[in-house]
View 1: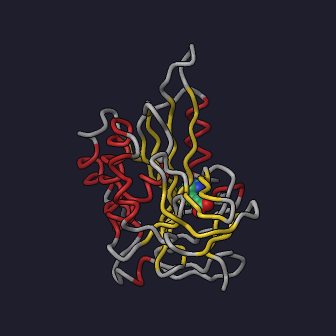
View 2: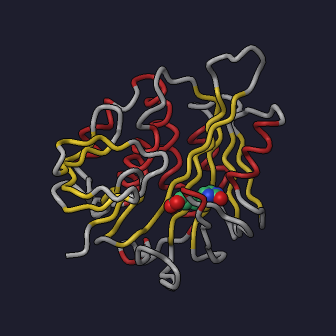
Amino acid sequence: MRWGAEALWEAVAPLLPGFTIEILPEVDSTNSELMRRARAGRAEPVLLVAEHQSAGRGRLGRAWASAPGDSLTFSLGLPLAPADWSGLSLAVGVSLAESLHPDLCLKWPNDLWLADRKLAGILIETASFGAGGAAARQAVIGVGINIAPRPAGGLSTPPAALRELLPDIDAPGALSRVVPGLVRDVLAFAQAGFAPFHARFDARDALRGRAVTLSDGTSGTAAGVAGDGSLLVHTAAGLHAVGSSEVSVRPAVR
Ligand code: BTN
């Protein structure tokens, strides 16, 4: 596959000194690989793309399956020192949706949805580096985007594909569409936190006003997100703010 890595590098390197791009035919998981490197002290700005992942990972310990050519799988690793990390995953979702298509919605905390079907997922992990507990950490921002339609078997949310919106798109085209904006937005987040992304998330919020059920058993009506990116849910017991770490949320089946 031809990835157009040179043009992409030229667009990103001025924003991120020392930036490199690597395309691997196969790896277990681009997130796992960049986390291994970070833990070994290699905390440098890098875009790692895999044509195939043998052990792709999703949030909450789930697997992320993808077929070569039919999906885009990559991780962006970079040292980051925001004053507050909360809302980063929402900001990444906003960035990807804005770069890809106006019809895409965001399903809290950070799935990209097309008409209530899942088009893309995001897995963010961090590793500390350097001695003495310095504030900087290596952020590893993993993104999986369905390019071509895929079988729904075993998925809790039916899948959508980018070709439904952009019939001629391929994985390299999607990569060059999202990465420059993603780098700009992540650097903006490091400076200003979630605030500049809040209204942009609201504009694409797939859950607002809908009945939702949380994996911890709570149910209520989604009411947008708070300034720290937590999900607000009106429940019988009052307004409840849900952090993203261990909870999943789905529209309630009526
Ligand atoms: C989710 O929806 O739960 C998150 C899915 C994240 C998948 C991407 S694919 C590239 C990167 N490497 C991984 O192993 N996972 C992320």
